[in-house]
Length: 321
Image 1 (cartoon, rainbow, N blue to C red):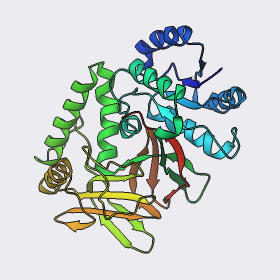
Image 2 (cartoon, rainbow, N blue to C red):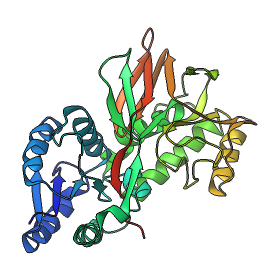
Image 3 (cartoon, one colour):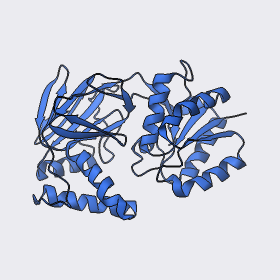
Image 4 (cartoon, rainbow, N blue to C red):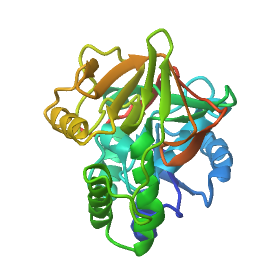
């Protein structure tokens, strides 16, 4: 009897060293159906095959980009019909935002053991619902994800990805160097080719709530229950909507956002350069501003608008007790 279908992407950074352990674990547990893909365009075929074995839980083993591609296929293609299996995400890749929100932290093999333990019992006790962000460019076919970063945050992520990660340093050191470079750029106002660029002007429109425009050090849209540094969605916010956080390009505003978030004090509304809102539809436009949805880059260039909406909820497996 297949209890778990495990979808692995060997090309994700974390799997370069992890995958041999995953294969060994699956070989010792015949309850797991393991399917490996080499690229995102194989995920649709993988899900069609996985649907035939009717797993109790679908587990994704890859980075945020792999999770995004799988959720997009799962939502649009309907390989499992109207009742897809709940999804679990192993902690993998460089960011693990989705896995963290679902309580998957630490060793991926330990997390996989926990998923198998849940699959052997009452899975329903561990199901949580999560809406997804549906991103479309000029109302085209949407791509789905759970966490979008824009403005200075997107610039910093791209800076880390394109200039720091190629150095082959440990993740923690890469992230520290990126943060240090961001401080030099934002706090001291330094401009150099080896530093992140100054964020471009971005216009953010919340349908029925108005418009926000300016230069932002942080722009976050998410359906996850955490916004920044572990801060939960404010209790006054409406779950099921898109949660928006924007922080002005100002050192004091950024410090205020980090500190208030760390203490769980973020609230809806605007306070000294920090604004938190929720809405059903958000439109982002700008001259040359990039946004990143779960690892994939989209450009809100001149004459182009990125439209964000939330989907109906999908079932996920929360690993934390």
